[in-house]
Length: 360
Picture: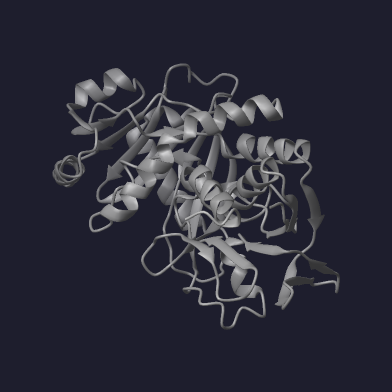
């Protein structure tokens, strides 16, 4: 049965759920300060990396990430057809590299873990890595080729979701939700009240600022800060073929990634910092990211620094997303996606569609 659904949050999770729910006949409204441009989604890199994001002790989460990855091609194709916008879905693959011998030992340990989970990943020598990515430094000590880890242009995707949602009748309300009251009703900071049959909380770290969630049964969602940079080639810069695929690197024990875009720009990230709600950009963090990225790909010296930003990822205590009904009548949640919001978006939206259809 079709419902009036109010979605709180205009990031990749909220917009994906809105698009999919509207396709099932629900009357959907999204409320957010600036849908498509809010929060961590706007400053993300858009990596779809279930294998290279596999962490020791998180096998269950890796299984979830793999299921989400299997849905991405159809999700992207349908979204492009409906919206008329390309989303930059790139299936080239990801290369993880090690700068020194200690970094290489860590990668070999990681490769063993990936193989123990049945994941597809291939050891590569330094010269083989440079054959795949010509811009890499000759000093690197080897790497892991992961053909199944892809990427999407985060900002292009958000724009496509906005367009596709509007085409399906999704309404958008600009504003911040201050509190929830039974109904369910969302009370905005300016006093406006929005009611619905079902309310979906998809505001990431913004949930902590919403009153009225006491008794909802939600886990703590904490902000994890991440600095991220965007670089663009200068007109005279010799950048052709420098970085044909995503590179993740270990540089003297620190992690860094470089994600090439179709327009020639590169996204460099990202720090992982427990600093509360701090969104300020620190010079030291920017310097460290640039230094590590240049150690891996010296040709980045020719690039222009276009942006330096910091976003807040929503993380639960066990790093798993929280998706389902809360203990408040008519209120559901889809949050806590941490580093995997873009990867998990198609699967999360499908789960929310099932939730409202009373399917298991």
